[in-house]
Image (tube, rainbow, N blue to C red; front, side, top):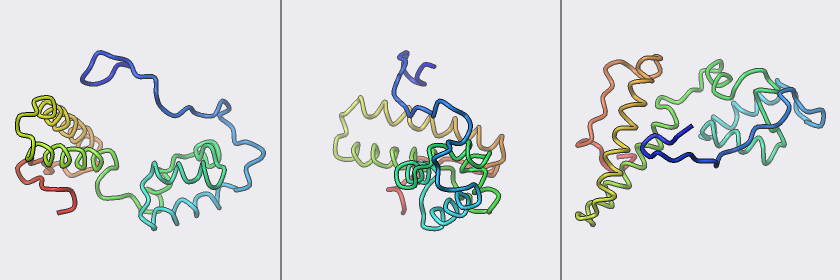
Amino acid sequence: MARMHSRKRGKSGSKKPAKKAAQSWILYDSKKTELLIAKLSKEGKTNSQIGTILRDVYGIPSTFALCGKSISAILKEKKLVPEMPEDMTYLFKKYAGIKKHLESNRHDETVARGMILTESKINRLAKYYKRTGRIPESWKFVPERMGFFGE
């Protein structure tokens, strides 16, 4: 699949395990894994951080193969889903960083274009999340109000 704002095809990304079934060497069952996911979420970890921790620390290559549902589905069942989706949060951080850079480097045209593209990605994702009911219909991205992330 091609990238959103360029005509190139990227090859990087994580590779899923070859088998869809749970491996025999995994030490955790589905209940323990779900409790572990809930614990990590309460500690403030995002879905991708939880997946990485489960893979690297606990040796669980795929929660979907083990539990039959994704990390986000497990968090949704336990009502631990964050208010704003993770990808939107990271786009807000990226937008804030670009805006901060442009304050000190006003003539950087490349970054100015990157800011426009990031804003487009935010609006495109917001449209999708409104359609799926993940964020309210009245939510609107206002770039002027966008200070540094967390303010």
